[in-house]
Image 1: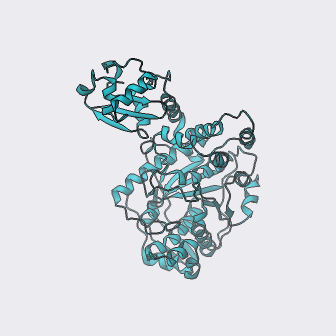
Image 2: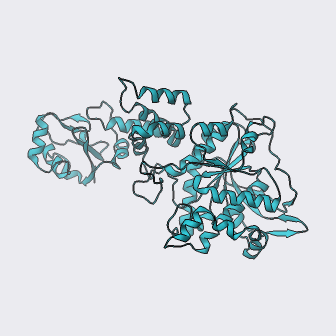
Length: 491
């Protein structure tokens, strides 16, 4: 859709005529257009008007909840805590940005969705901002080198994938009101950036940005001191994100921007622009601690073994198993920051871990169930539990092709032709599939009752593969003891 999107500053007024696209919270609902042409604001614009408080379902202050659970790093102004307690002010609008640098969000992004969900649960409104524009630049925060440039097709694919994930998660906390009164919305900042003129932007926004302040940001200082350095393109990122906040504050009534602690510089860039250009108060920033691995590094998507939120990139089973396997030293912290369980229940689990008779991994199981349900829904959790049970030799769970494929990502696999597998002795298949190196090793374990075919113990050394052994005509699952397994795909 053609649109005018240039910045103007005339007779004491700042305005941006344009047409933008708002994504409403439903996968199946087509995108709708909203016209905000001829928007203007006086330099003395007061705090944006907020909607009447009608959906406040939480009696506690959301900032206090975040602090209690270890989800609060810092706020730009302690007045935010007071505003959240003001029963007459109405719900806040809170936004978090997600740049489409991959087709899926990952575990490191999950905290942003959890904090947005806490605001939703306490009656406020969530805004997820997809960086269709800023994703073309790349946020230098926490990065040692510039991000690779993405082509338009890749960006579009990434945006669609991220929107689907965000929509699925935030809709869990959505109220049952109309679209107009829904407690979350997804926007794309490319809608207001795509035709902005550089000279107009520099004149009307860039003039308010102080280079000294921009260079003092931690993310900039680290890069300038590195051998890689920083391009001008990356240097401007904080100004682009800052303007996003100004735009959302003025045109969408967004009061709060949230982000990881590495986003502090970008967030304060926005509050400064709002104060200088709009001469308005009431814009707040809130950061939460980064989710770190046990070695102190961030969860990301460039490292091997990234924990993706999309089931097409990481199965619900693998997602579940990751949290089921976290160390005891981390599990209580993860329960606090990654789930919505009552603190009382979490404290009880922590206490039980220190008592005699505690069943190992009880807390991990609770964590894995809660977080898998939150990200993948009931179907995803059911799939993960079924696959987990299917991996237990001797399990009575009836295996199907989908369940075996769900575990195949973390299990060695091979492909053999149907004609080669049919009537093949189990001893030979165990070797040709790579489960064992020698037939003698297979026979020894067979005598000990340690060989399983599709979770059923094989008692007969002369056992041959029959047509009914091939699950759905597609796969076999061979197991040697509890841990060694191989998936045989039938080609």
